[in-house]
Image (cartoon, rainbow, N blue to C red; front, top):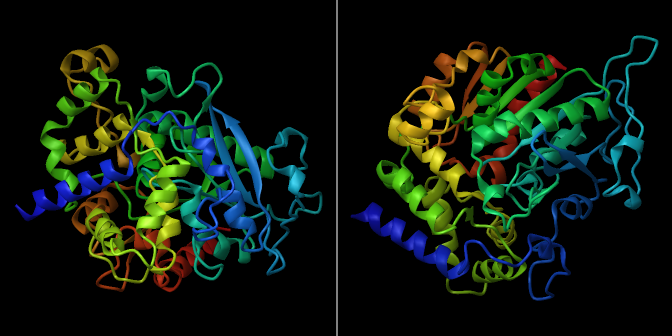
Length: 441
């Protein structure tokens, strides 16, 4: 009963804050000037969140094979340290934002046999965006820490979030725009972004960091495109997700009926999930501000989604965090994650027996093999994670072919979302990730 009440509370708050789950207000409105009553970072897009901390930012756009236009954000160098190795950073101006990078210079290996630049690509989780890796002080946010360590940092965004709402031929108002799940992103989005990053940075291999579904897509991608193993030096998996049947989060109780929910929502045209607008972001940020009596509800929501909080997220920055996350996705993506809970398998999307047979040639969706990942992997997990449960993580670790680090976070209350925003994540997680990357760079 307690779990059901928690779920009801979450659902009610979502509908209060997001009265229309598929708003007609364009997500580009998040780029409009901020309200003076809000925290000054509340409505800043990722490039401006980077610049306000004193770092350079570039905006790049990638077109996938099936026509989606994705926005990548880059921190090419750190103003706080001299790049290590032979990193030859691009010096961007404010006018570089939005330019086609076909005209921009590349970092290459020189004739003296100097080493390649150190390039890292970071991929977000479900309902997240590139913003999640820069919403903290420079000595606490993962992207800034990597930049200060001499890495050329690229932040990915997948289709359906606020930086992935463009397509060559269709708009988000077309239902076909939302007919994708995370295995679709594994097939198209992640490969397109990695290819672009390698070409633009002038390197053969990059390091990859994923959080939650950012790891799920990486694991699935290697089943679909095994040659991409050769593009990646090393992979750091924060809260890795392949198996989810030990999941504690309340939404897991919906898993037995998830396909029915998916069909019902599809028939009603509800294909888009929790896309923010300027008004919804401002409202949610305001509800979580210091002077509002409802502020504890914001912490409650974060607790039951990721696990009881360690209270190491700066409470004064939570209004900014909730203005950027959730960042939107398709209902099918959420459905697919819940199918992993229900079926206790790491598998492709389950359309149901009839359609599965048409798509896959079998009544059940095919398993995705973790052994297809041959890249060295570091797994970083915590006991208090309600999404990437330690038992599920250890099954993932056992099935991966080349785990070189299996790091348990040494804090009993560190949860799923603390990997992104906790003020102690730099010491508990990021310094270990940096050590792993340095071993392979």
